Amino acid sequence: MSTLALKGPQWVTFRQHQRALWWSLALAAFAVAVLVASRMWSDGAVDALRAAGCPVNGSDSSCFQAQRNYADDQWFARNLVTYAAAGMLVLPVLLGAFVAGPMLAREMESGTYKLAWTQSVSPARWLAAKVAVPAALTLMVVPLLSLVFYWSWSTGPTDDFPTYWYEPTVFVSFGIVPVAHALLGLALGTAVGILVRRTIVAMGLAAVVIGAALAVLSRLRDDLWPVRTLTGSGLSAEGHAWPLDRGMLTASGERILWQDCLTAQSDDIGRCMTGRGGVTWFLDIHPASHYWPLQLVETGICLALAALALFAAFRVLRSRHP
Image (cartoon, rainbow, N blue to C red):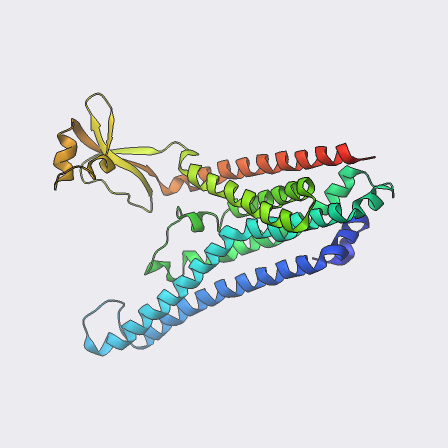
């Protein structure tokens, strides 16, 4: 991000908080390095196994060590992707708690915002300047992280040690949801910083509020789009589908979940369920084609919440304007 392009309040914001912003860029660069290393490690394992003339699976004793080295290297590469996904999951919390929250709370606590307001800078313009700089950084960096993650995840070690698109850490690591989550984290951190007006307290409270919001979104994610219900025998979630509820349907259409029979004193869950009036098995899934609808709906919710948080912050500032 070129500082030459920043003027007025944005330049002041960058100068005041450049350490936090540069640290954010450094962490993003480290995340990209981890993802690139994962892909290179995985590709190197494939090349080494190919050079040894051995298949991935086989009973040839001469290939045992090469196959073991391949599996170890792929597992290590897969762990790097897993750690990167966990980092993407907590990224909104870090942005809100260590960038937006203290950025606003520090100025409210020290009273320096009053000086800006005496220089013909309105509360709306002051707030926009404070939010614009980290938001611009987010819009530049997070999409890059999302693309690099997808590049590393989709063709890397997941072929042998798979992770799936619907897993909580993976779903928020590529697509448009990572950007929406990051903007939500910034907005909630901004609102908390202005409301609390104490730097340390704002950091802790922002982490709690953002973490709670993300946890609720994760919990409700499978309900954001209508599920597809399969019926019959021998049901399985094929084609990388997201399996949800499974059980049996009665003649009246009532659902009996298989969990209901786990506590039953029966060695045969199927007999337990059919004995309760089950007619046919069912399985609720989100097929892979639901990935983008789920992403779009969750993004819309995040942006709406972010707008509400910023509006609340603006109303608080207006009430304190002399």
